[in-house]
Image 1 (cartoon, helix red, strand yellow):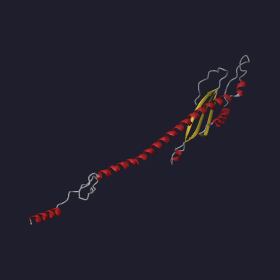
Image 2 (tube, helix red, strand yellow):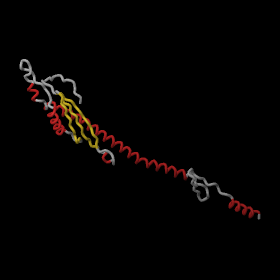
Image 3 (cartoon, helix red, strand yellow):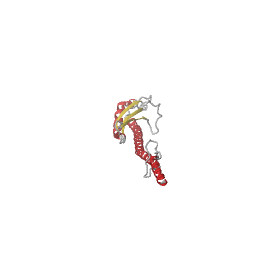
Image 4 (tube, helix red, strand yellow):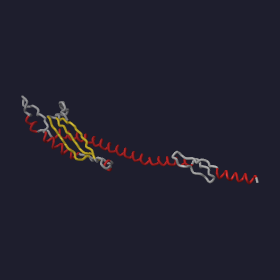
Length: 209
């Protein structure tokens, strides 16, 4: 009789006794329970770890995209710098051609007999009109690849000729970006002085170029 009462008391106690408190994670979610009602420890932590790893994986494509964009910018800047160097070299070559072929014949022969003994040397002076024409022809003939819309400005003063060039350099990667400039403008200048004789006469002060 006592055993049945004790057994009944135990059963009633088990039925009325509250179970263990459910554990919750930081987000407020209830931890899952196994078949015996015991919380499964570590399940929620494992899910949080996987979530963090997934977030890191999402950042990898973004980082690769940033590296590609920086590389494209570096390539386009290098192309622009190379175009500026080539335009400066072209300006030097054009100035030499203009200083050599644009000498005014009229000025030279008019001053040939200017000396007291009749043997005075002719004056060397560059014709501005001929210098501009020859500089334009030389720029069109010697223009390197990658440069377009080259503008030539040749100014002659005495024995010196100053050549200014202005051209466009096309980008490679920037044209694929919507709204970005597909080219840039570069400039180059050079001064050449016409001299006489094998050794050449000393050149005067440089003109503003």
